[in-house]
Length: 388
Image 1 (cartoon, one colour):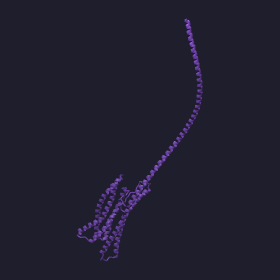
Image 2 (cartoon, rainbow, N blue to C red; image 1 turned 180 degrees about the horizontal axis):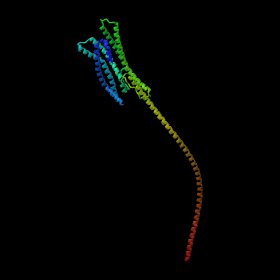
Image 3 (cartoon, rainbow, N blue to C red; image 1 turned 180 degrees about the vertical axis):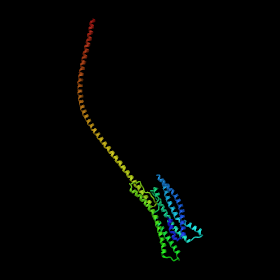
Image 4 (cartoon, helix red, strand yellow; image 1 turned 135 degrees about the horizontal axis):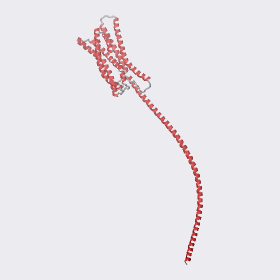
């Protein structure tokens, strides 16, 4: 695209003739194909690491910190490489064209090639920036697929201010350099020629229209890449806002600048907010479990209270029964004492009776002994009498 714009303006600035213009178009086309093919090949080599990382993430795996740093460096390397290709390709084209002209004619027009070199330097720098911005636009989806959530290294992050201001300044220098060279060439060629004002007006008006077209396309390309990042972030936030609240979701970073760092900080805030909600949920669970335990303890205490009341009632019943038993025992004991007293008195009476009986028995026994002795003596006496 930038080569087309360059081809649109440069022949008009340098006042190329038809044959020279056609030759310029042909060489530009061939150099674009050659340099572009080589650039695409090297970009693919740099992109292979990114491609492997995307495939790994699509399979459900996570990138290590080392792999993430390598992927981020691959994006930066590709951007820097394309900037150099875009910036140096016009100088390379100048070298090729000068060499071809020298080989063809044996000499070169110094002033003409000095002008072309100046224009090639300024436009090459602008082209490098535009190409780098457009490749970022093309790779927004690839960056989104990597699920990049955090940026740690702030020193090497690009700035949105520089991404917008530097191309604008370069575009201003391109306009000034092209307009200066165009004015010098025009009045140098027609210095000693009578020309009408309408011819001058037509020439510079045509040139101004071409500059306006180039400026608008370049500005649109630069702001398109910036706006694409904003739109992509807006869509992510819009999806998160319209769905149910899910603190596990994060915003993917698609630009390694202060906007990307801002999104990284937002993700860190969401992490802390999620941790806070988890802590609150855990605290709520602890309180809920504690309330259940208190309720269980209260029910257990209520059951124990009922059991204790029953025990107290049983103890009271036992105490009443014991009192009755004690009272009955007391009465029985009193009756026993009376019985014992009566028994003792009867025992005393019986003892006296036994003693009297014993005395009587002793007297009777003595009488029996006396009678027996008398009988024996009588018997002996009768025997003696009989013998006599």
